Image (cartoon, rainbow, N blue to C red):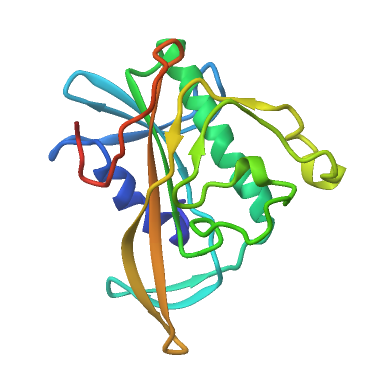
Length: 206
């Protein structure tokens, strides 16, 4: 069952590349493990990985009530976004899909804002506004085993991925505070194509 948190990101993912009237299907069988969505449309297969890191929120959006838990370990969350890019790059190289996207939707501003400290243990995995993701990325040497366990292999990107965050929606919390949801949509470059990906936004099907 899709959680309430995921239901916020689902419409955003469904519109990222799918023409009107087509359907999207979750997929679990691939050469690189679990895949959140494999969309069949206009004769193409589009692989989509979704991430929806959350800051705690209680309130209403779109006529529906939400009670979202606060998720910590943002350093691991950022690492896993990069891991999704690597996974989709591999899927494209293996011929499992024709194009791919990684979509991050969050109400946690620490994802789109840069850190005042340049020496955080996850500095290589930062995805703030204006960052360009490229090359081989790994944890800082002082990162603890509790953080890196199961995530200690450096992540090698083939393409270059500029991070451009866009507003998705606003929601009013029960306290009256306005929560901003923003998204990052990265078009993934297949292995061997090189170059820099074009900026994408929800609703852009090209």
